[in-house]
Amino acid sequence: MDSIWLEYAWTLLVLIGLEGLLSADNALVLAVIAKHLPEEQKKRAINYGILMAFAFRFIALFAISFIANVWQIQAIGAAYLLYLGLKHVIQARFGKKNENIHKDDEKEAAGKGFWPTVGKIALADLAFAIDSILAAVALALGLPDSPLRDFGGMDGGQFIVVVLGGIAGLVLIKYAATWFVQLLEKRPALETTAYAIVAWVGVKLAVITLAHKDIGVLDYHFPHSTVWTLIFYGVLVAIALLGWFAPTKKTVQNSNA
Image (cartoon, rainbow, N blue to C red; front, side):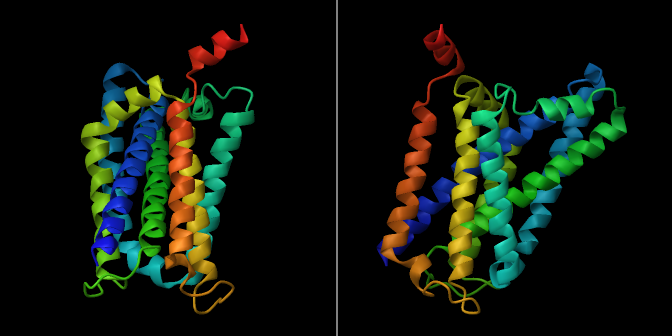
C-alpha cells in the first residue's frame, strides 16, 4: 500500500512541475500578446488575463469526470496533447526563428486595441486551461486505484491528484509564474522540454484509451502495470534531464562561432 502512495506523491510532484512550466508559458504568452499596448493598458490586460486564467482552470476542473469516463474524449485529448507538444517541439527544433516561439502571437496582437487584445488573451487562457486539465487527467488515470471512495466519476485518489494539480496551477500563475519565466530565460530549453513532456503525457493518455474496456487493443491492466510505469517515468525523467542540461542560447552561439 505504501508503494501506491509513493507513486501518487511522485505523480503529484511531476504534475506540479509541469503545471509550473505551463503556467510560466501562460504568463509569457500574456506578456507577449499585451506587449504592444501602452504601459497602463498592458498592466490591466495582464491582470484580466490572470483572472481569466483562474476562471478557466477552475471551470476545467468540472470536466474531470467527463474526460475520465468517455473514451472518445480521452482519444481526442490524447491526439490534442500529441499535436500540441510535437508542434511546439518541431517548431523549436526546426523553425527558422526558434529563438522566439511566441513571435506569431506578438505579430497578430500588434496594432489591435485593448479589448481585442483581451479577447486574444482569453483564447490563450482557454487553451492553457484545456492543456492543464488534460495533462492532469492523463497522469492521474495511469495511477493504480486507491482505497479511497470514488468521487467525481473517478477514483478518489486520482481525483485528489487532479484537483491538487489544478490548484497548484492556479497558485503558480498568481505567485510563481514570474520566477518560472525568469527560469525559462536562463534555461530556454525547458519550454520545449515542457511541451515534450506534454506530448509524452499524450502518449500515456493514448495508452489508457487503447486499454479502455470498449476498445481492448491493449490489455485493460497494462496502463497500471509495473513495466509501463517504469517506461513512462523513465522516459519522462530522461526528457526532463535533457531539457535541464541542454546548452543555453549563448553557449550554442559560442560553439557555432
